[in-house]
Image (tube, rainbow, N blue to C red; front, side):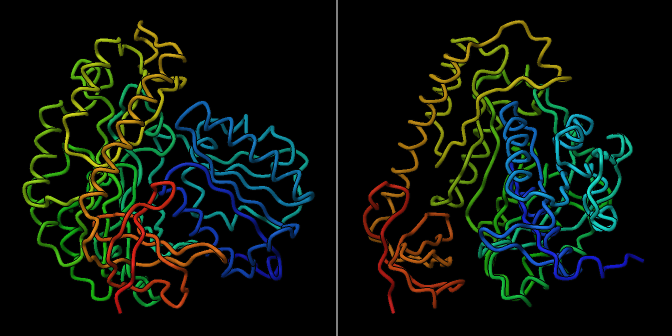
Length: 439
């Protein structure tokens, strides 16, 4: 039994780097600490506890993690500093040596953070507590809102794919998940808290069910039955795991939105083979075609990596032309970053930083072109928008069912409300369509 008296009236700050899954987990950590008596520190207030949830997807991510830790140690002198997340799992010794760090927790420990805080007395030397990746077994549930309207439901963790460029299987362990029944219960709890929209998150969510003998499709059907949740979004799903039955179901679902995020990584088959991806461009194109056949207005976001080892100029041109021909809405473009211990380091051809930058800029320009064309097709339509709370003096924003960002005059009485909006022209920076609320 943990004695929580030491936590009464203590304050904490939280800093998260990386993916939506990390943000969801940080929010859950915050909830655990709040229930123990810890409140979130106000702006400018010195905190008693600092929690940093790290990312390690690129070398730049590692650098940002170190910078964030140094900054928080300086801003909150004397605070008890806890570091967790992917960088903490991969490099626990390095993180523990950073001045001011007290405890480093691996993937297996982050869900039980409370028991590692002790009496909050600073350590002379940072302590690293991790489990070897091959022995990571626990699944820590998370369904949290943070400071947004949308809830993020963690349905799966870990990955068995071992793509040649990626360290995630080493940072998060093998694929595992909770039960469908537990996911449904968490969704019902979100309803009780006033939640209307849930994003399904995980590392490889289409792999859901490996540890429980269930399937992602069964999970989708069960969640669709939860009264009170008006919208679900599937955050990211591998193309080979996005089955036609899932696409068909979403097309006539009560609550699953016409919105997909599908990692492509490269539009060249030779590069996909070097990456050890489990599909080719023909399969990817068939998935996009299927979605658009049954949901012509679906928003489709696509992840792309540029400059991976082995991506010659000709291979990139093939990829660019393939992506240009896809009926997708937005590209999330990442420059390849070499990760220690990955198989990609054995590939000879190396792309220069300058060439990576040029390729990235070309794809980002293509993305803007596709997104703006998608938005423009909807100007003049009336669509339901779930509004999100705005900061004082700024316009209010929300999203349509197919994920078009809409900007309206601020009215915080509309926060977390679904309202009908007539979509007008682009706002000044072309990040949203201006809308008029219809009463």
